[in-house]
Image (cartoon, rainbow, N blue to C red; front, top):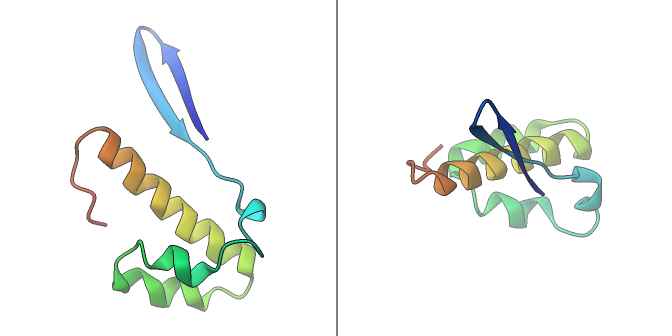
Length: 75
């Protein structure tokens, strides 16, 4: 989800995702394909699925935000 907030004529974009809606529906390894290999090992070390999904989804949202502003998306 993307939220747009305005404060003092400045716009802030906020991207959110509910990891619970991904668990059991989207394989973590499928999401990892969209991230650099260097992040795969860390994501797979989390003890709980929820934490791994939060980590991966957070990085994917960061990439999306960087792309939105035309910035380098390499994490």
